Image (cartoon, rainbow, N blue to C red; front, side, top):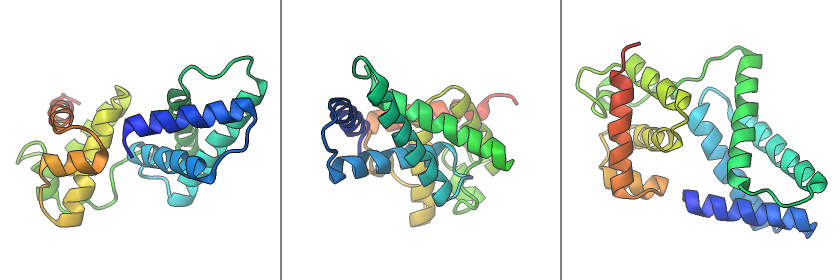
Length: 188
């Protein structure tokens, strides 16, 4: 699912809820799945059940928001992402875990190739934290997809494969990887 289809489906879901029409299962599942991936990209420390609880609570809040609203939300996808990430952050604080990258990337060497031969897993984690701090969702999605693919195939993935997997253009992926490289290089 691309960011455009998430925005479109979110807008459709909010419009259906606002009009109090029944929601199609396909639409609900699409928004729920995309929102789960967004939360996972930023808060990988949360388990699947915790992420699904966050997403379900977010959608419940959207239902309540549309019931009380005088007009439809102007940007339902942004609203959903903001609420979901705030709930996830609260969940992380409640359970006392810090957001971090995947437990075990394929290897330090494969992860480091993303940025620099001398980059460490800690540097990658710091770069991801900086992307989160800057709310650079594209970098978070691209870097997470890159790392997942590296683990999956056991080698540094081509940026075109990353683009295909995360739904961004090849140019956007390269730009995001460049920004991520800069985030990793920032002094701590």
